[in-house]
Length: 173
Image (cartoon, rainbow, N blue to C red):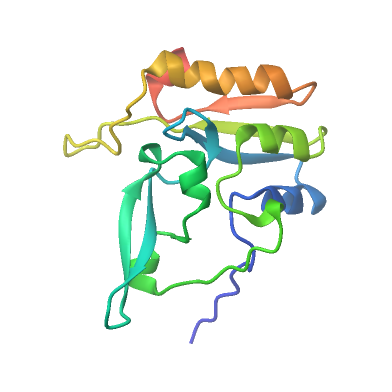
């Protein structure tokens, strides 16, 4: 039998990024995409799952794309990772602002020690091998990049920052 020792900290939170730095990381990597109201938000997947409870008490997970929700709407959700549909639900207790899901890029830039470097992965739509797309963005690529760069230039101070992306057009721009 294999036992998994999973973290009790939610990934992609201010708390988890600080924890990595406090345990010796020189740099942390996280993904950034835009909410519907064009705020750069830290979240790995294009899609998230929220839950609903049916009249008979059965909990159902409902997928939606991050880009379709405002920051306020995102923060009002009880979210789940899409893998929980198959693997079961994992509960997180959010005790502070630093533990909540969907921190903004601004919050990361202003709340994590400036000597911690950032690898900011820019999440952008990619065509998959089967011809489908991961996500159809509602935002024009220049607007997307401008919003991210605006936050970095305003709040990045002297922090060492690397940008990365799996999309060659984003890297070129």
